[in-house]
View 1 (cartoon, rainbow, N blue to C red):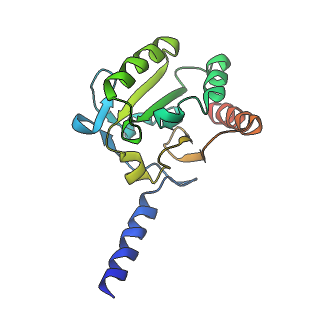
View 2 (cartoon, helix red, strand yellow):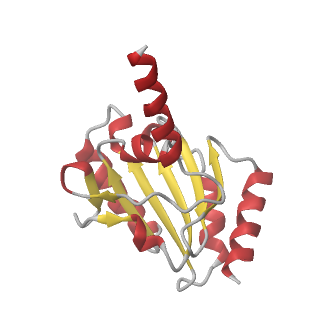
View 3 (cartoon, rainbow, N blue to C red):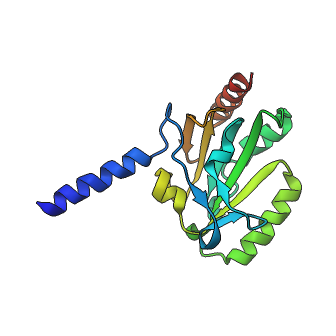
Length: 172
């Protein structure tokens, strides 16, 4: 009976912290042994406020799954003062060595200079935000930090159009 109560409480806490449409993103910091930005600085979710954010949470094994959206966002030439793309790489979801992934991320940074790349070495966004592991997740946040869209897995062309329209709507 005690185990069942504990499981219910833990499930409730997980759901409470889940990224939910219409709710503000639960605060989180990725730093130190857990990861951080490419230049080894801490990444804090409250830094996402003030801009519309397209957050990609990506397992390196499926890194190309939603590239079409990334390319569309780049070609849309959205105002950098109002919009930002954040790519959080789930380093714990792959067999590939972190050093190899980090080299590839530096090359990606050259290709997409306006994207903020973050390394998640401990699956913090899986544990704290209930994002899907071993996948490519896309979450869009408005300027106040509220989730306005989320999708786990491959986006269709229709999904990409919806995301672009939604971002443009919230930027204005």
